[in-house]
Image 1 (cartoon, rainbow, N blue to C red):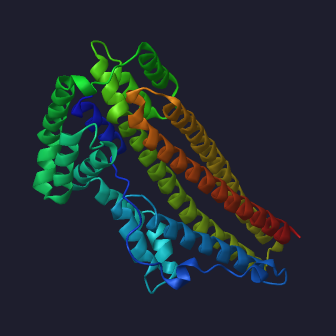
Image 2 (image 1 turned 60 degrees about the vertical axis):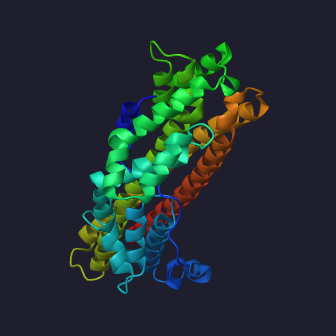
Image 3 (image 1 turned 30 degrees about the vertical axis):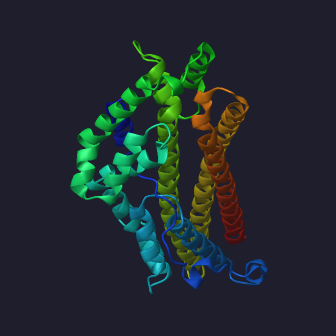
Length: 367
């Protein structure tokens, strides 16, 4: 598999999944939930309750991003917003168009960030056992300077990849045999895998003129390269969409609360009531669309988790040396996608709650 294919995929995603949350604990207020008794108090001011619930979920969303596997640019920016002394105002600004999240996304797209992403991804997807030269070169690049990473991306990866390929070809004792059933399996992956980048990687391994070495490299690192890009792309995509949804929700609720307050002093009660009702209906429609989107994301994550479960089972049951390269990564991917599935389900529940609250508010102002 050539560096050119991988570089094309990297540019398609143009982002890096970090290796876990930054060190340090969240500020105490960031994880403080609104007491259930307060939310359940029907005598409380309903517009204030829905505003507070939306603000709490926005803080929780930023906290999740700060503690996520997203690129460091996003995680550091999210922590800064959470630690701001301006509280909810800082959160709203961070989520808003042109705010902290969007600025972090722009920083991710710089050449330096993309080069670093490429090098770190190589470390995660190339094992010492299958690709010792590539792994060693990538490790040096990650720990080195920006110039070192440029050199690795431009030529170092391809050169190390060729050294590994030559070593595998010369090592008759450990040469991995590729059976017809293995090639057929790769063909199935190329046609049916739920991940676009995995399909592309499999198609590359089956391109005209390929040999068993290309199939072995697919099992050795190409499969995980595509899988990593698919997971990274999913995480960035849903984070980007949800940030916009929360910013929009905050704005729509503010408009609805203002319309409801105007109803109390309006000379034209009928007109003011219709405007307030319409404003809360807009909030409800937004929440319903968000819930529908998250149910679709839940289905996407479920399909990936189910697919990787099948692959992990097949790898564990296989006696072929070839399959040993994918066993542990397949199990890890299954767990990652199962976690994304659970997260999507929970987020869909929040938006269902927002929908219910907005509908109740719409009925309240209607009288």
